[in-house]
Structure formats: structure tokens, C-alpha cells
Length: 286
Figure 1 (cartoon, helix red, strand yellow):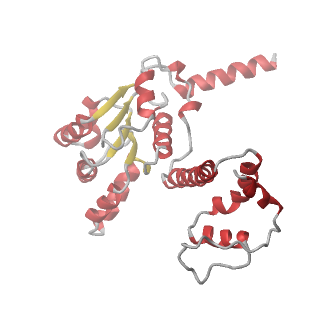
Figure 2 (cartoon, helix red, strand yellow):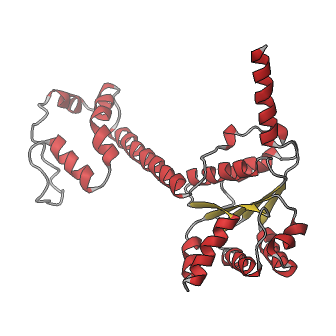
Figure 3 (cartoon, helix red, strand yellow):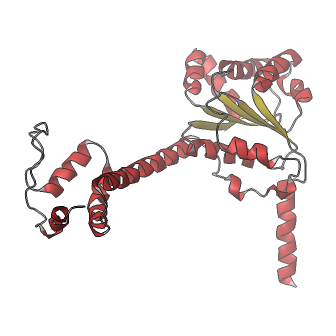
């Protein structure tokens, strides 16, 4: 910055600082100094981070001889970073995960069948804007829900809206909408989410009406929005869950048309963790 700019540090904090001559007049802008003007302007622009950090960053800019452009970039980066962080927090909260779990917390050692490159690709969230699906198949306790939540959190960080629930709760939600003659409105509302996660398909069998509702949920998002499904059953046994092989086949057809299907094999994650904890307990007791 120029020497004249550096000398601004010596000005009294409340000295009046006129706006440039070509600035459109704003009758409500305070006339009692630059801090008051900036407080007003950042409030009107809804940029609270700039309102908090313009002054310390200005001090740093003067000390380190930043150009005006470098100062502007730094202050805008702070505002954008805070806004993105707040947005991510909101998306994770409104996703209704039962617990917030991350991929980084997941121990992949017990899943030798899981290709790390495929998981890394899914973690980028690039499948979401393409309206592609993810299906996680495997026995109970292997970590399907943890992986689904972890991928959902990654999608939220990438800027995509996510909604999580179990298969039985999705059916209950759609059933209530159906009985209230608002099923189409509910499906339209769900379509606003870029990614929905359906957990625990196969744990509870559904009757014909529930199967039809579930099919409508899948069909309503076909090539429009992403779906992630976890199931303890291979596709060949989905007819048992939905009480209709034809409906199950039609559902699977739409799910896998644009999908990454991961069949997980290995030890139960929960059982293995329990064994490790018991082993540590015995070691400590000795």
C-alpha cells in the first residue's frame, strides 16, 4: 500500500471519511466515520464476517504492504469461507442423520472387499449432480450405515442437500402423505433434496401398499435425484421384503441403471470392535 494509506493508521478512529465522488447517495449511511459506515454497509449486505474482520485485516495489510486487491481478496475469502461453513453445518443438521459419522473415523481394514478408489470417488460427491445412485449391500453390522452417513456428510460438505432415514420411516412418511391426499406434494418436496439416503432395506418386510409407495419414491427420483440405499439382502431376495417380485425387479432396475453397487464382505464391524474392546479390557486387568 502507499505511504498515504499507511498514514491512515494514525487518523483518529472516528474521523469522517467521505465516500468516493461517484458513490450513489445513501441517505441512511452514517456520516460519523469509516467504522460506522462499514458497520452499516456490512449489515445491509449481510456480510457479518467482513464486519468483524475488516479492521484487523486492514492492520495486517498495512503491516505487510498488501495491495488493495490482496486486501479485498483476503476479506472476501474470509466471508465466503464462513458462509460455506455455516451452510455445511445447516445441511448436516437438516439431513437428520442419527449420528454424524465420518469416513475418516471408519476403519476400512475389516472390509478388504471394498475398493478404496471407488470409495474415494464417491466421497467427492460427483455422483450427486449426475443423479447417480449408490447401493451398499452386506450382512448386518458390517458398517453400511456408517459408510452411508459418511458419504452423506461428504455430500453436504460439497454443497448438496441430503435427507437420511430408515426404509420403514420413509414408508411411514409416504403412507401418511398418501392418506392425507398429498402424496404427490410430498414426493415433490423430497425431490428438492439432491441426495436421499434409505437405510436398512430388508430388515422389515412391507405389504403390497408399502411396496407400491416405496416404488413411487424410487421412480420419482429416476434420473432426477440421487438415492443411496443400504440393505442386508442381495437383490435376489428383495422380493421377500416387498412382497412382490415384479415390483422389486422394477425398483432394482431403476436403482442400478445409473449406480455404483458395493457388495461388502468381511467381519461384523460391531463384533470386531467389541472383541477389540474386550481384549484391551483383559490386557488392562492383567
